[in-house]
Image 1 (cartoon, one colour):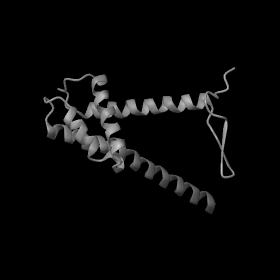
Image 2 (cartoon, helix red, strand yellow):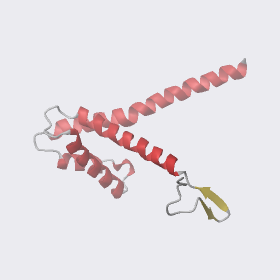
Image 3 (tube, one colour):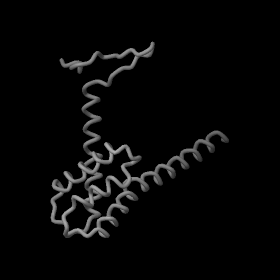
Length: 136
C-alpha cells in the first residue's frame, strides 16, 4: 500500500514545532477541489464575455491562466489591474475593450463580492442563532 511519502518525511520539525504533511489522498483531493474552483472561475468570466467571442472555453482558459499567473507574479494585491490588462491584451480584437471591461467588473462582483455577501449573511445568522441559544 502506498503511504504517500514520495520525497519528504511525514513530519517536519522547525524550532521545536512539528508540522505534519497531509496524506497523499488528501493532497489529491485538495488539488481536485482547486481544479474545480479554477474551472468554475474560468466559466464565470467566459459566460460574462460577449457571446460573439471567437474562442472556445478551453482557448479562453489559456488566456485566463496566463492572466492569473501574471497577476500572481506581479505581487500586486489581488492582481488588480494586471489580470485585467492581460485579459484585454490577449482577447481577440472582435471583443471590444468596453465589453471586456464590463465583463471583468461583473466577474469581480460575481466571483469575489457575491461570496463575501453570502458569507457575511451566514455569519450574521449563525451569531444570532448562538445568542438566542445562550439566552434560552
